[in-house]
Image (cartoon, rainbow, N blue to C red):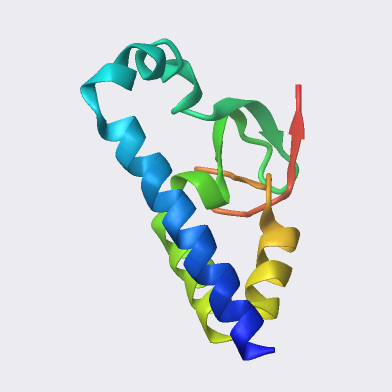
Length: 106
C-alpha cells in the first residue's frame, strides 16, 4: 500500500513540477496574462453568521493555514488530507467574523 502511495506522489509531483516549469517560461506568459482575473477568486456573498455583505475569498485557495493543514494531512496519512479537502473545498471565509462556510451567494 505504501508503495502505491509513494508512486502516486512521485508521479504526481513530477507532473506538477513540469507543469510549473512550463508556466514559468517566457513563451507561455501571454496565455497566463489573459487569465489574471482568475487569480483573485472572490465574489459578493452574504455571511449567515454576522450579516456581512461583500467580497469573500475561498478559504483553501487564498489563505496559507488551510494549505499547510492540507499538505500535512496528505503527507501524514493521505486519507485525512482527502477528507479535509472534501470538507472545505469551495468554502468562503467571512472577513468580518472569520466564519468558514456560512455564506450565501447573491
